Length: 109
Image (tube, rainbow, N blue to C red; front, side, top):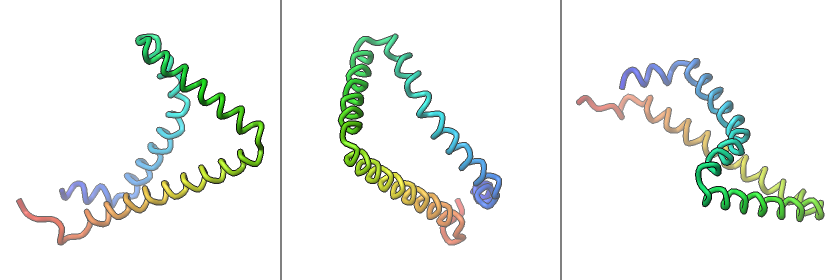
């Protein structure tokens, strides 16, 4: 437990974890299509499901492209939700770190 506390006090660990999180987030959006095509080559059911999701996405994309005000409204809502989600994640991670650093919470075994 002491090693975890030392690790959490190290700024390099925080920088590395945030950097890796950002990289995973960026690459996951690009890898999703590749993983979908890989799984669809193994499973017919997954292939049908992936094709159906893609068709539904294209219908929604065409609908939003035809209605620019709805596109703006949808973008505003999604951005707002993503911001709130990010703030909640930051608050949870910071509170978890502060709880670990409090000396009263560590009991000897």
